[in-house]
Amino acid sequence: SGLSSFASALGAVGMLVAISPKLAMLSLAVFPPVFLFAAWRGRRMRSGQKDVQAALAEATSVAQRALGSLRTLRALGCEAALLPEYGRSVDDAKAKAVDVGDQSAVFGAAVHFAANCSFAARIF
Image 1 (cartoon, helix red, strand yellow):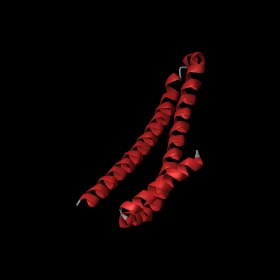
Image 2 (image 1 turned 180 degrees about the horizontal axis):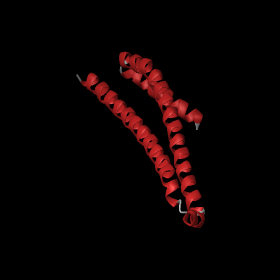
Image 3 (image 1 turned 90 degrees about the horizontal axis):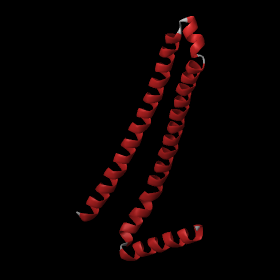
């Protein structure tokens, strides 16, 4: 699979050079930095998603602790004591999820904007 992908990429570059050497050089100069930036952002977004999953696991853990000892908590009259802790853990998970979503949206918008600008620059 790797050899056929390499051959396809090599053929595509060859065709691009045959059609427009100037555009081929520009593409070959721009592609590596863009690829490296996209890979770096992807790793950061994956790491953020792992943080969101960990925060959700913490919120679930708090809920399970409270539900597992519900009779004891009711007997002692302190069932509402765990509510703020659960609320904080859910709010933390939500904040992390919103942050990751915002980062993903900004990255996607930047990629689409850059692609549209490159098409517009080639047309005009």
